[in-house]
Image (spheres, rainbow, N blue to C red):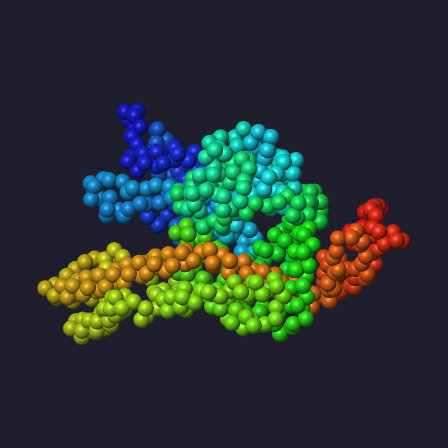
Length: 639
């Protein structure tokens, strides 16, 4: 400017004020149908997303860099940014432009950050891998003790365990979290361990890890006075759990996800596998990256997302509990022998949506009508499975799972009566409540829909009146309903100006209205808006009914996952001719005609057979000793 002074517009002043609270994140600043980014955020995002960098206005004498992404396509851009290591603060308009103008013609629309998107806090279906957990972990050190807590906010899973620092690397390798929270005091010390696990490191202030505040923080989430009902937790465990809860409050702006009560894990319950061994065994990911070529990819026959996640958890942390192992083997053996049982159950499970993630989105108020129908459809399949197998002589493990599928009739009836078969994605689109469920809604819809037929009749009257066959009554968000004809008929329409009131002229079209059309539009608009508001109210009521049953629904989801994993392993055994092992507490190790599943699968693709091998690592008296297999690469030690 000629005066040398910089003038900051009210909108840019608002942007800078909001941005000052999120210096370490890209700010998605909502402007109408776009999220706009400015200054250094715009430069970084434009490069990361490969989109055009433009400019808007001046600041301190220089151009303001700007780029933007459409709101309707924002999820894809968010995923790209998160994968490239960015955090994103999503800033929404908290009122409409019309509401802002009531405070003055130049008033800026109120905006605020509604969510901080980070690798460990994703919930959207399109941003997550359906068959994998997305863990957020926190590691706390309190004096001489340490603990690791982790949560998947998309499913509600919440765990904690005492963990000395020397074992942090192997545990992170097992869990493969997306993000790990540490105290600022440990940031440098733990940076390499977290990086080796492929996770993003987030350092929090000492207050987040305050163990004296942690118990109250966690208790508040579950609406209890104390955590005594969940078990006894050491100070380090409380510190790690408290940090998770504090971070979720920060990132979700007070809207906490639906979490299950924290489960305390014993360090000796699962097999200990160090990070290097885990990597080289390629249990859940191949050395080349990705799932293909891993043991998990080779054996996974699950048909539900929840079942796939459970299988990965068990493969990542094999149980050392003999009773647990044999209970699982008994259930798989039954499913293998009972072909009809297995086939019918897997067919029903294929139709089960991901309840856990639907519940999570609904709890964070990010859900839509399809999340409601996901719960309904899962309940339908659960009821069918329960009714079919409730009197079957099942092993204890399968019997317990089937028993947890019943008891949801009232919720299922409500959802079944209330929802259409195929709802839209967003509640604001309407049309997801079934006819006959709500009398008031049916009345509003009738008026709205009959209005459309009245519009069609009115169009025919205007065609007859003017003699212009191409005349149409159309609608857009700016003009509402209007009469449109080609510019060639403009003079004829203007001659009827007492009847037809001119609204707009474009290059090829001329647009008019009438008093009758304006009055009809008001009636239709009111009916349409009223119908939409009623549907939104009904959505809120259905959402609340589901969340009130979140605990039992979580149990049902776990039962379905258990059934899926069991029948999937039985299917694998049937397809590949696998044999049930005898597992006991002895040190005996004896395998006849053993096969390596990953190598055998790879050979099959090439059309080559796998040569089975025996393996007996026992002394003559049957006692197992430690055997060390040596030899050069390609000597076949792995098989």
